[in-house]
Amino acid sequence: MRLERLTLVTASGERTIEIEIAESPEDKMRGLMFRTSLDDDKGMLFPYGDPQEVTMWMRNTFIPLDMVFIRGDGTVHRIEARTEPMSERIIASKGKVTAVLELAGGAAERLGLKAGDKVRHGVFKGK
Figure 1 (cartoon, helix red, strand yellow):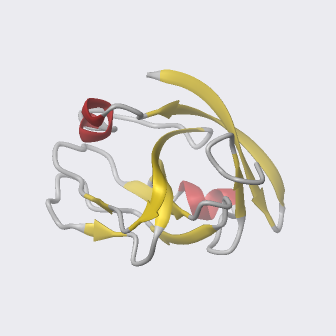
Figure 2 (figure 1 turned 180 degrees about the vertical axis):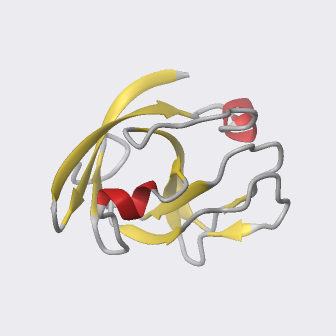
Figure 3 (figure 1 turned 90 degrees about the horizontal axis):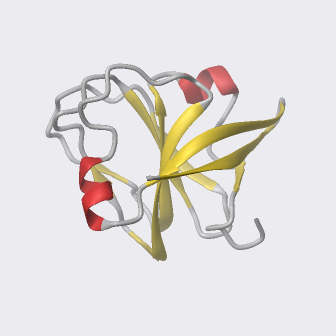
């Protein structure tokens, strides 16, 4: 997967993290499965193009994750924090989004990221 940088714009300032881009269907299906750790300054971005309801799950994912659902303009729609490892529960965006950013469980809170904050990266309009 391609490595890039992404900027989180929060009330406490900006924070740039390194992300892997899950572009292909195979990359999206595998995601962060089988990983045993993930630093707070790392993540994986799942771009979907057109706004849509997106669903994720934690099958074969060994560590808790924060799933950040992001609208086309880079606004954080919602965050599902500390998802349960190995769970097959469906986690929905609960609204139309164009991407999902996966972070280490609890990282969104530690980084000060909340719904309504912005994410800057080339996949979002207005970058």
